[in-house]
Image 1 (cartoon, rainbow, N blue to C red):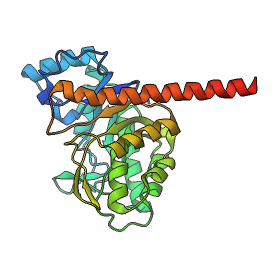
Image 2: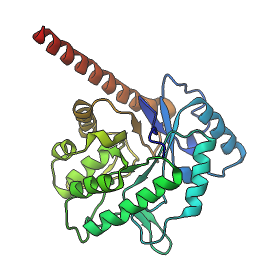
Image 3: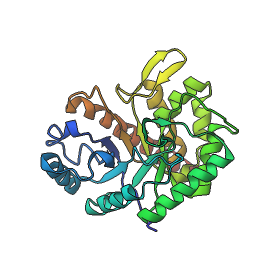
Length: 290
């Protein structure tokens, strides 16, 4: 199994088909890596397929799956995993991640449903993650998801997440927006939750926008600008775990490319600030010890 996945760095952007033309003038000094849902690009021909090939030759890519349904009751889709393995190899994709959720029950549900926080579910989903890693012959990352109910919970969200990571021996795609969304919807402290994350598992990070339905209800939409509390949580993540590759997700209400890139620049600015702060702290410690 290849343990050297997710060889990416810096600030990235979720690449969508509607960006195919507007992204043409963007270069590697503006975006360090791109992410796609493989389901939207596998087997695609024509102008989209040609453009995708050109972009994968210019930029590092990672994939973030939508349909594997790691927590689902049906057997894993082995045909999909076979096609995904070929897709990863053909386009030199740097890694694959999926949601810690499920989306099938004798057919696709077209939504990401929460897995019950139980010991039985830990063993079920961890086994499916290990099977996926064996087929792809590489480690994958699972993403902490936003959820709006916790049916049948026997443990906390954090206990469940840590248990799956340990049992499956996989990596973590840390979504800081999802931490913030869940903290509001379920009434916990986002900073305290973040402090319990096993930092050694983090492969890369997501930030995104959301919709405020009410004071105590946020809907994770990826359809708006990133808000200040999420930016603050990202900065805390860097302070606690060091700078990690970080990607901006935007799925609809997508602004013009220059405006979108201002948020990618914001990520890079926070990364630079975190590195400078860490360097200054190390120099201060060295001076005191001299």
